[in-house]
Amino acid sequence: MRLLHIDSSPLGGNSVSRQLTERLVDQWRATHPGTVVEYLDLAVDTPSHLSVDSLGFRVGPKAEGLTDVQRRENEISEKLVSQFLAADVVVVGAPMYNFSVPTQLKAWIDRIAQAGRTFTYTDKGPKGLAGGKTVIVASSRGGVYSTNPALAGLDHQESYLKTVFGFLGVTDVQIVRAEGVAMGDAAKAEALSAADVTIKALTAPAANQPEAALAA
Image 1 (tube, one colour):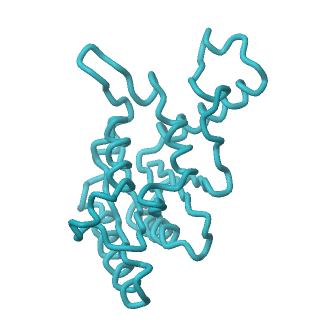
Image 2 (tube, rainbow, N blue to C red):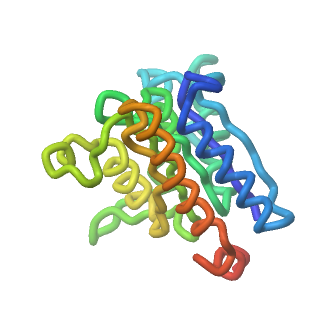
């Protein structure tokens, strides 16, 4: 089993989402011996945002006649999408920034959302090509959105990630959430404790039977 561990927060040791992904991956490895983990830190190794040189993904004849810059950008995109497709489990650290996700995480998503690789268009509409994997989003939020109707409409973080991974064909998208972490020490401790309960449930082999499903 291959697990891709992704962090996107630039806050280092002060990041709640990084704490969650670390706990998730450690617990997953403990309950799924033999898992091979690959790590991607988007705060350190950030793909550039899409530009005239990186927009579009060129393989085969389309790769002919590229400039050096376009060739380098194309290689980055191919590396990232191949890494994503090879993973059975993807753990994504995603803090909420201004009601959405960090720009470095969006830049990664823009690189892996490749027509012909992770999705395609058919006569019946778009079809995802990256199914058969589990994505676990480690979500951290300063405020409380999930249980507050007045704030739920401002969530363009978890809702966006569920939508985009679903568009790519991933039907098993799980959320480990720690919210209210900026509302005092007690609220933060309670949020982390609740997240730990979710982590234990998601990483238990019997909870989602990943070994049987992902080994197929």
